[in-house]
Length: 467
Image: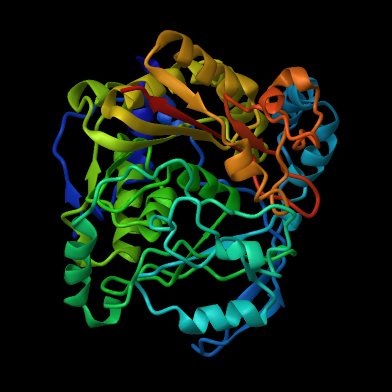
């Protein structure tokens, strides 16, 4: 009870402000307090910065690279000690490199996700001129024919040994959709958006260059969203199609919800967030990037994610569970040793919460539908163990291997870790003899930061509910 009282007092002191949910439909459902949700960091970038920034001068759209130095904070020693103890065991030889990256925020790379609902041609030109390149093919990932060749296959900029040759695979039995046409008509009512088509575009740079953040301006849509590019992988794994009903169970601050709306035209996207202040943040994010014509299709819900599946059982085609976790990037820079110690004490409770959320998601998805579970931590107990626990409890749930679909084609950009701690930190590669069965990552794949590829941490697992 003391924890709840302290949480409520903190909420009132820090976040007394007007709700920013105007323009976003809010489902009125009873909110159950969930203190552990507040352990989640604001985003996966949190930490001190000393990186090159692209700054705007005199209000011009032209941006130039400048160096901005900010005072660097020290890492939290209790958290680092715990990470050293745990991750040296779970990741083996991969941990020293990951540790060096996590302790060097100036080396962190930053992705730029464009907003298809805003004019971005000048931003695109600026990105190219500064040496950014596209991470994904510029096409409608929701309508590429099954088995069709992706533009990545012949792209010199991608330069990978393997390509996204089948995207998305294994879903040729989809039903015709009328929602995409209806949404297209809605977009035509806003002249500047008449040509908007589903196209998830993210630009990355080999060096830690970062675009300036765009301020929230009521009535004006932002042109891009800054993010850790690894956070797009769960959205790619979800494979949202036009006309589907999608649930983002742990939605704040909203980056993955925006990515979903860039990639497809779902009939419904329910963005759930139980914490009122994070929910305000989520609503502000959606308002800043999505046009008013989508207000009836993108809704914000305040439900406790653990009970969501009971109230809306079998409702959704796809469910994303970007679960609250011990965000390694953020926790490593806790404000004080006391805060770090408190977070570490709460850490042991997270797997139980995460398993409850995943079970709820499997209840909310329809038979034959897909759930993607993700975190931004390297911790095996919050990743593979949670998935394995839920699979053992849910016989109708079946994991799907993401290694060939995502890890192999994107291995030039992301460093993927072992399938489970038993691999002792040995990075897995596709066998030369083509026998992939022995290398299956049935429980999920893990992005591990390393020098030159500083994306992550990011874990993702895809589970299908059997019909």
